[in-house]
Length: 328
Length: 284
Image (cartoon, rainbow over all chains, first blue to last red; front, side):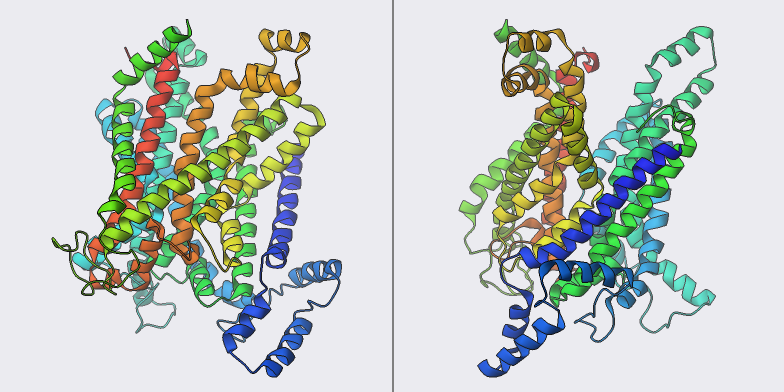
């Protein structure tokens, strides 16, 4: 198990290194440079623009040799210095992101866990109940094909605008300040419901289809047939099938994380929910490159951490990896 | 013999309800994308009518907050959706085939390196990378967007094709081809690839759908094409200009509905094709 996790950890470290390099490289690789864009927007006199330009180049240390810029980038990163947001000047990027994290977790963790559990249960049920299979399967395909933001828009329009049951913007009402009271928590949950539901539904479709297919595959496997021949009760056979089908679903969760996070970003934008997605939208609209790069690193780190946690769970659940019988 | 096999596929393909349904929906939208813009009377970005006008005989899908014709935007957006799917999905599939085949067939150190690289790109959240690339491009077109989407979408395809190649590589006919002194490239292209043609085709379909969804999300975040129109961009504008608060459903609903229908049709088609190609799954 140690070897398995060590190998995984190596890949994650390499990925992190790769991601940070991309983050550093892309602004320097792309045509046109941000300093020129920034100065062009200010529409200054030519001589003033030139002074400001040289000031910016020194301030961003763009006059240093490339390798030194790269090294400084890493050093700043380990100090937790991601630069200063130009949109919310002079707040540091890390503080802006830090404020968004609770909302991301509030939305993502319950949506991922509950949809995964519910999808697995319903998918396993669909594999043995004909009418359920006939409804879940088409529904599941429609749900997985739905862009996250569209389902969010649909729910916001139907339940928020037309029916007027739920608010369609923000994480809490404007007339309430975040504090610990029953009133605030109620308000928070009321605003949380629609974004959560739309994320939950899109993910649910994928998990249900995956589980249904895996269970059908497992019920055809030799060990199921053997148990059946021995006269084991159907319930026992299904229990074994479910346990085996669970492993690919855990791997699937790790593989889907990137897409799920992307979906959450889009959902947050629809509901103006103050998480990272909303930050990215603001950063794009205000051309706040530091904030954008900070969000990028934050997402990468989050996804890598989650991946590693899933790997540990996988190793604990699968007896083969636990005993070191398989490499990957 | 070959004609016979093709005949058999066609027979099962025509009998497969999932394939029929998926293909019909897809064809419907392809036709709409091809001839739809011809019926559009206005430029998708021109301000032509009264603002926030619901659907009417004059403006079939209504107008936006600024009085742009939603139907023209929709018809042009549909076209770019297929362009992104075709180019992005195509590049993703080709890269996946190339890397998967080489890694699987060559094995050894090259495989280790390629596999490591595949795993790294696989874990990276595609959209985050696309966001950072797109943000630094001041002028963005649909073509460039598709290319970047294709370049980040290949890893799962490469991994699956590598596994398939592994199992095919040890077969007798590949050994025989190797003994006859054929070059590796020829063996890969003429012995191994044709034997997983059905699989490669299904990979392309999934990549096609994935590219469309990725493009929609990227456009929705506001990093879509700066010139031209796309379905994701329509949704982005709708949200930014308060279509939700004003209840302009004619602006909100059509773009996402089209994406859902196209991608859903592709997925259903894929399941149908699986049943057609794989004799074990056929229902007689």
